Length: 387
Figure 1 (cartoon, helix red, strand yellow):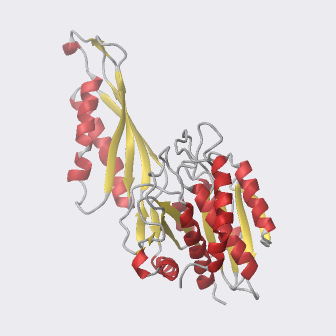
Figure 2 (spheres, rainbow, N blue to C red; figure 1 turned 90 degrees about the vertical axis):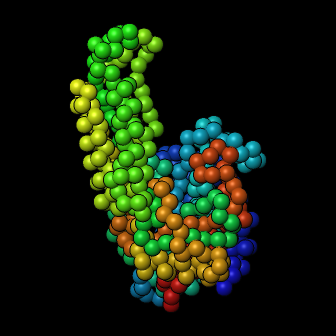
């Protein structure tokens, strides 16, 4: 089955919503204008129940199908933008200096709004669809905040689904896999405490730069020697701060970086080895090292049955040749992971064509992808809630 006729007809309207949202980006939980726009649209479509303020500024719309009873599935889009200066040069570029939709959340919202309009008009399903518009995906754990605020229980959600655009894959294609599809993301900071002194007399110091440099190099063995060669793991040092003058060896040095993993075991191993390597190297030089390790989003793990359902809906829309069901795990992170810990579901990628990459100042969502996303949401909702 090809694109829905209604989705094609909605493309121009959805494009206008998307470009409006793109012009007025908001960050993290401070998405009051965006949330108000979403809520007003949902009410204008005749959505049965529109609730604002879930997880501080999230919006949920509930559309009930025909007949009594039935299950409830959740469809989620994210609302927040990024603190970047836009360089796309588009006529609809951000009007707010230092903020832009560089991850396509404007497109995600427009596609879910398009599906909401179709589903509210047709109601060709039994049960209910919960349309979830979430704040603070970009580092604020808004998905967790909505769950902690009773999202799943309040709307009796049985299954949950998410979607993200993917630059570099052709418009009209989808990609998904069962199991881990996106990584856990953690941050670490290592403080090396040595003994400073005159750079002309290094023998009278305990040089934290030398020690820190050895730690940076040694951390690379975690991936190459401490974990299996087919187990994905990333350990990257991205910061090194020390010193303030050319002729002084400082007392301290500070390193920072990120860890990306897909299983609890590899996550635990990375944290333990970072700490052991840092303290061991520091001790060998007569210094001390302190590890501060912060766990952020967990891995995004698709449930097997729900992945099959999501893939089937995508195939209905785009055809089997345009749906990759063995997508390689992506080392970016996504707080939809919290929702998949709370309920069975799946996260799918939607091709966004030959655009700049995500989190790039030149990025822009490709409006040609809108009818594919709208059609996918509708097919998925109707198939999972078949009357």
